[in-house]
Image (cartoon, rainbow, N blue to C red; front, top):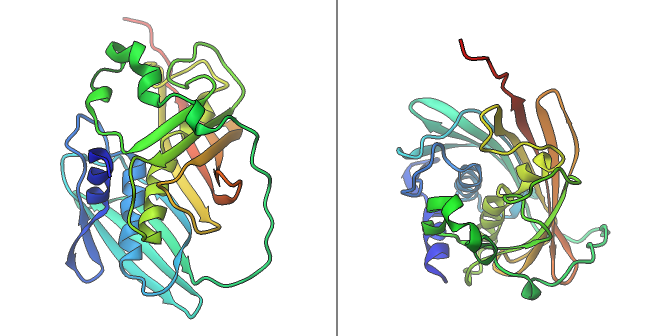
Length: 286
């Protein structure tokens, strides 16, 4: 396991401070707010720590307030239902006495059933593509302290990088992802790692058709909600194709969808996210 992945696994190893209450911390990095994938992954881990049977099969979450990276996050778990096949949990993440995030998560025991899926897109294999760090090396000065951060997810983009594009493009994005090392055989951990990684690229897909970026003073963006469905068992330390598109944006909100495929072509995870895409009016100088 790489140092970066070991750090992420430790980040997900929440401290149990009371029955159904857990505490998580954030990386010691210069961030304005907690990364959404982190709070989502920690919330799923908190829920899973209270479940005796089954693996995660879905989560539905809302980002309520920006998270403060300088203080711990408390995760309160409500044991909504314990059934024979399905188990449901409600998680509320709290900072400064207020909810910053909530998640409804469901767990399902393995059982046989009908099966079908859409085919995986035809794309170059990950071994033929450069890592994100390699592709961004010429832009090291532009991205500043990003290069000094720990990067637990190996990302191999197919086509143009969203960070360096100069023109509007189709709202489609594809990349290979995997944890940078070998993980323990824990389905909950693999689902949490995939949840963490899933929030890294979806919003960029919404922005692709528009000539705006995160650095623009007249643009404000934030994730509003996040949903995931875990279809099949998978390993987050093996290559997953992350296939994304954005079918619509309107009224300061955009929608993105994502699908994760194994190299064998199995669709293992589907997700959707809505994001705030607000244009802030520029006021002339007085």
